[in-house]
Image (cartoon, rainbow, N blue to C red; front, side, top):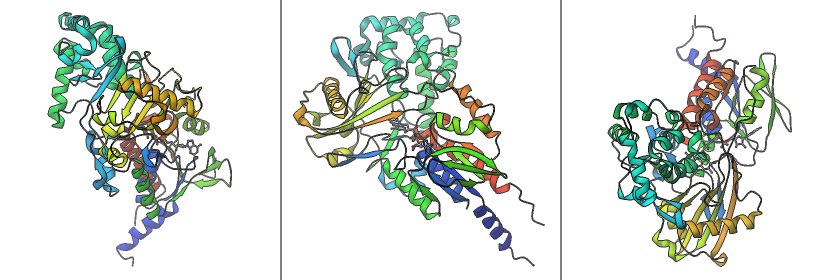
Length: 492
Ligand SMILES: Cc1cc2nc3c(=O)[nH]c(=O)nc-3n(C[C@H](O)[C@H](O)[C@H](O)COP(=O)(O)OP(=O)(O)OC[C@H]3O[C@@H](n4cnc5c(N)ncnc54)[C@H](O)[C@@H]3O)c2cc1C
């Protein structure tokens, strides 16, 4: 007679016998691997680079360990925070200082605080003092025309750029909205889908009869839902940097017996005898019952294409960005003259945005000490090579220093530069660009139709940890369920 524990033991043995290979050790791959390892599957992670984490990257600059890729996560729905807590990092959670961002590149080289009462930079009140400071009286009156236009002309606009230009005019578009979409999505407003970037805005527009009215209504709704009046999306970071999330994920995977390998490039997936063969640039292929692709979009599409006939392999237009992290000696910056960072009116300067990390994060300021500052300068956007691309590292550091001085409104001489680090990223095409939702839905469907194959990552989920983490969990759940129950006969 079997004891009650036996079926459970058999299930556990069954799970251990099922092998999952996760290709790519960025946050999406590590989270998917964790979800599979948790239920006892045999998990192997194969990462091409020498280190794990993908865009969650840290580097030492002038003796400071700093985030040089993602530096925070959106608190929306608490999904990333849930993972942080699960991994035992709750004590490291920290909020940015409420310094606010600025916008630079205004006529005459000016800069002003980014108005607080908007959505994607669209103001709820064109005559608010902080809005007028950016777009001037002429811009404010033109934006106010939005209130006077008949509601019947509104319709349902897909392009954010077209919507704002039509209703509020070019100044509101160029000086308020374009810096935000450039900073957040590395994309122009014309390419952003209103429904994807600001769900509910079009409906509120029809309801209220104006764009500024719609922004006000939507902000009120969001505040009521979240209990917060924080401008834009609230974020959190980790004391010591987001690299700690990667370390904690890897430690948990180790504890669960997963095999996590670096320096392994997966080159092809083939099928043999009802199992996957995962081919690598070096070494023997691995056999697996399930594969989760957690790479960039072109690699994932190329690996899956031979098995998913419906999968489109036309390369997407992926923005390339370079982030130059500077450590400078500048007591002048102790006063945080431009808040936590600066967004730039596109086309006016070489840099696209800047984060004054020592003004934004208390832990970075504590580590740097007074008079020493960390500044991250970003270059590049969709359809536009980063201005640093043709330069060597020293040249990129000098350009970043000049841009930082101009954007922060202080003198920064080369002798004040203590250290610099440059990193290049090919970003996933933002999920909020027009046509993107349909393209990713088609890719998901094509991949899901292949038994034992899954895909995760920013190219499918949308940019940002708050999108990537829950999506990776959901996809891993789909794959692990299909593997756990495959061929399992019900207990007699
Ligand atoms: C500069 C920058 C700053 C950002 N800041 C923030 C932020 O502050 N907050 C936020 O929420 N989001 C931020 N993001 C976005 C966020 O970091 C990403 O959405 C997320 O990290 C993507 O994770 P991923 O696992 O999908 O991709 P990746 O991190 O790109 O991981 C993919 C991995 O696959 C590996 N790989 C590729 N090909 C192969 C192969 N053939 N074989 C094996 N391995 C392979 C790669 O080496 C890589 O490690 C930022 C993005 C950038 C570029």
